[in-house]
Structure formats: structure tokens, C-alpha cells
Length: 349
Ligand code: SF4
Image (cartoon, rainbow, N blue to C red; front, side, top):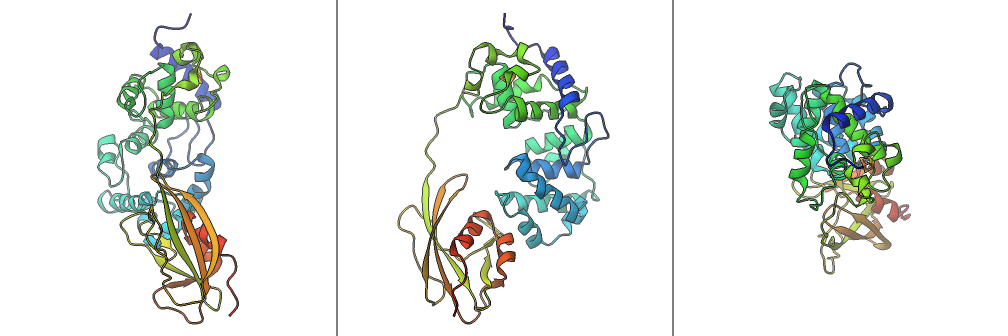
């Protein structure tokens, strides 16, 4: 017989025992029961993981912590260097918030992260999730750490019929009842690991799940129906033109984008407005412009077809940062790196 409702203490003890034996070894994580992970590493990893997968975030995390081993080192870094190191991780406003937060910790807290959820939440760019994760994992505070993985596990465990996102407060309340003063950091990470490796978005591995005996979603016969999804509006599509300008030495014209707006503060290629109708095509310099096809990119709120034009011009234009090709590729966010690759080699003058 399936349970009427999951037994909180049984779920807790079964999941923590599973975590002790199966915790993922991650670049930023101390093993279960070991000394706690430094708050800087927890914070940095959690910010990175909000927009990407663990395998994608890992080299970025290793690079950041090698270049800036402490939060004070990061606070002292040049904005441009940090933005370039973030290129490819997406959601660039987070990189700016990352720096603002590092500078607040270095400037206002002597380089030491505050150790309560409330004080962490007061730092710039630190939201409820990150504050709870750092409080639980770095400081073993009884904080309710709820991300998409945890929401999914709760929705399945309790067979929640309310669709997301409306169900979020309910899922958070359900998750809160499992949080106690006993091993709160391990509990948060155990739930994350269950969601990431067993209670996966598609095809959950219920046969290997330590809490399957308590799961109402599994008892319903269709656990992957949860969380129930609300119908989504289609993502709008935009069009634009981007200009890849080489000089006679094969260097690329880059420009820093305005701080506000999409990809704010990042390096970019010259481009016009991205619109839903015909995009304006006004090359920024005179030249023998060639069509180089188009690239596709998907942002959170819209998808984009970017037509690529390229030209090689004889003299430097002072308006641009002339950058060697490989360095330019590394410094550009993904959408522009795709356009640069599409442009191919510079034309010979
Ligand atoms: Fe998720 Fe299946 Fe475990 Fe339920 S039994 S928590 S659906 S993996």
C-alpha cells in the first residue's frame, strides 16, 4: 500500500544514509561529514550553477578559483577580466552581480562572508536560493534550500497537482518540513543530488531511489507527470545583423556593450537592433561587405537569428578594440563567438 503522505523522518533518514554512500564528488564540495566547504566556493558554485549544468560550470569554477582564490582576490579583479572569464556561462547580469557581491564582502565584511541567511540575503545580487544554500552548506544553518531539483522532488514525493509556477510556495512549504538543525548542509546537498542523479527531469530512476517507498508520485504510476506544467507562451523570435570587421592584420573589431541591457558590460561585435520585423542593415564602416550566412541563438526570453556580414578594412578605426582572433573568441559571449566563427577567415586585402 502506498503511504497516505510521505513520512518526514523516514524520508530524511533514508535520504541522508543514501547521501553518505552516494554523494557526488564535485569540484566545490567537501565530502559528507568532512570539514565544511568555504563560503566563497559555495557561493561561486551556486551562482554559476543557476544558469548551467554541473559539467559545464566545473571548468569555469576551477578557472575562477585558480585565478581568484579568495573573495577578496575576486573583488580586486578588473571588471573586464571577470566578464571575459564568465563568457560562455550566459546570464551576464550575474557576472556583474558576482563582482558587486565580492566587493561588498571585501569592503564591508573584511573579506569574510556573513554567516546567517538574513545577512547573506542583504548582499548585492544574492537571492533567497543562494542565501539559503550558502547558509546551509557553508555554515550548517537550518535553511530551506529550494531550487528546481528540490521542487521536482517535492512535487513527485507529494504528487502535487497544482501546476508550476503557481505551486512554488506550496513546494517550498513542503520542503521546509524536512529542514532541521541536524545536518542541514548535508540535507540540502542530498536533496540536490537526488534531484540531479535519480529523480531526474525525464525518466526518473525510481528503482534506485532511496525514498521510493514514500513517494506518492511513484504510487500514482506516472511520477514524471510531476511537477505539473502550466501551458507556456511561445518564445518570441527576433532578427538582427552583426558585423565582423577585420583589419589588415586579421584582428577583429570588438566593442564593449553598454552596462545596462542584454549582455551588458560584455565584449561584443558591432550589431544593429534585434527586432521582430526586418532588421536594420547599416554597416558601421565603409568596406567591401560580404554575406557570411546566419547563426541561431536562444536567450531566456527570445530566440534570435543573427545575419553575419564581414569585411576587411585597411585602416584601424579608433572606435573599436582591435583584438587577435583567438583572444576575441575567448572574450565574446556565445552568441557573438558563433557569429565570429561563421564569418570565417578575413579576406586578403
Ligand atoms: Fe523521484 Fe521516483 Fe524517487 Fe519518487 S520514487 S522521488 S519520482 S526518483
